[in-house]
Image (tube, rainbow, N blue to C red; front, side, top):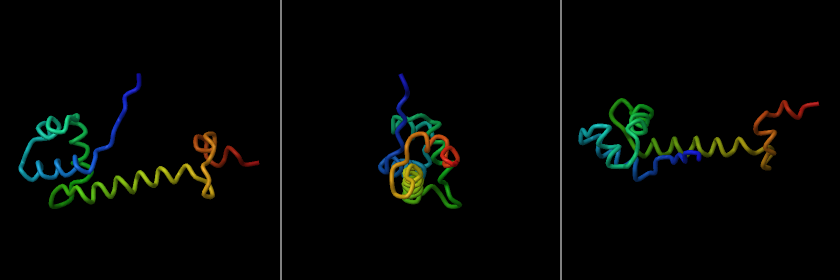
Length: 94
């Protein structure tokens, strides 16, 4: 059985931002969210700016990356076949 990974939701990012400002530990944040401490640690490492953690830019970055990954499955506006997505365009060159 494969593990199902779920991205952090905007509400969870707001909770992290709020608890981070209050000085809560990563383990406390993870316990509150029902997530792994590693998830919270990665989120803070990835999205902490010079001032503090900001949930809105973090969510915007997540959405942009998700959209970019989604777009990579399309070629000329049409869903590419699985072989094309796995091997890239060179697999279909003459």
